[in-house]
Amino acid sequence: MEGLLYPTQTDVTTTGLMAPATTPHLTARERDLVRALARGLTNLQIAEEFHLSQQTVKNQLTTVYQKMGLRSRLQLAVYAMKNDLV
Image (tube, helix red, strand yellow):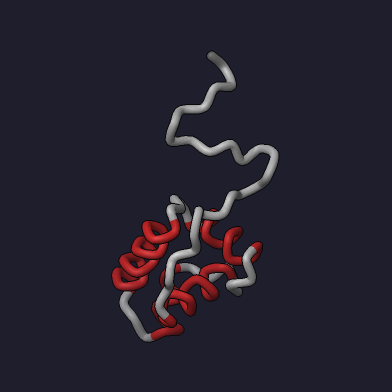
């Protein structure tokens, strides 16, 4: 059974990071946070830049991950760069 994908998995080996089926509507604040994340800023740095708490940044990024069907900041950063969100 090696090499078989479970129904929830996506084959990203040949195409790189696949985009979600549709790009969800992100608020202006969410787009700003995605840009900051893609620049390599930590949650603390993002919080300081936008005058937010670290927990607020974490919560808002979690919302973005959920909207976009992504699981990590790396996936979000790659998606943002490949889709000109930065």
